[in-house]
Length: 313
Image 1 (cartoon, helix red, strand yellow):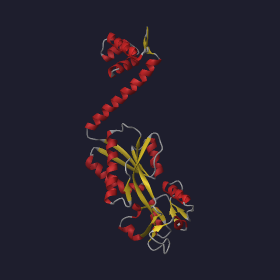
Image 2 (cartoon, helix red, strand yellow; image 1 turned 90 degrees about the vertical axis):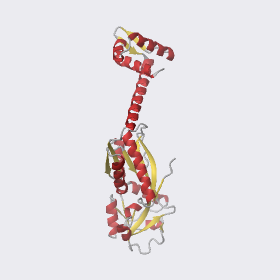
Image 3 (cartoon, one colour; image 1 turned 90 degrees about the horizontal axis):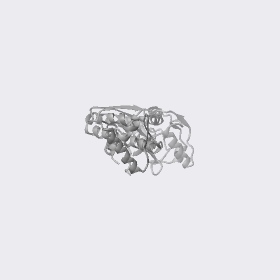
Image 4 (tube, helix red, strand yellow; image 1 turned 180 degrees about the vertical axis):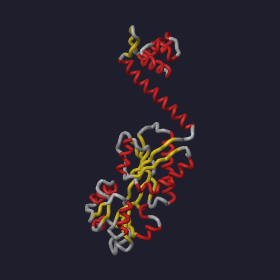
């Protein structure tokens, strides 16, 4: 069966008449009738019921119509995709980021996009991971980076890198606790902590780790903003657990003491999230690749502190 036969058949069903389809397709009506008969012989089933007021599909005809229409739609989409690939990427791409990722990724990614794809408008929105995930599910962003894998049939996520989480406090605040370069979970259980609330992804990870090690987390001040957590720690309110990038830079490194947590060191994974559609738009696809390239360069250059790339499957 040829593609043109499928196109003829779809047009006949949509028009409800061989004569009308003949005019639309600019093909003689007897030739269309011949195509339909050949299709019926090949499939071994009657496809059309003919009457005084035109034609309508049989049950077999309805099945063929649905599949033929889907095939035509996919081929047309493929044609558009191929045409897009021959053109310079253009348009708007919306990217959702948690704040800690945004402070490392946003500027280099925007600069790279402006240099390589000047006709693409990259719009970056930052929020806590839970909000970014909802944006992705609702289609309010085209791409997202999250600290968790996504279990949703409309979305696809792939791990890109892991980053270390560290315990830190105001320099000199700790005294002898914890001792050594690595803090144990039992050390952490005895400390006053400044952490995100229970709805935050980082807090959920820390609660799960504490439970797995059979130790409760100590006295807790809850704040759902990394900058506020860091500043409270800077005033001597307690200890916090944040990614290394939250306390890197000369100003922060001079102000804080920090420790790895556990053996192996506690870490979390950054995932790149996109719509679960193999025919992703060309412009979004090039920005997705640019995200991967930019993250890889940040890891290799050391600008994303204490992180490493995840080996692709």
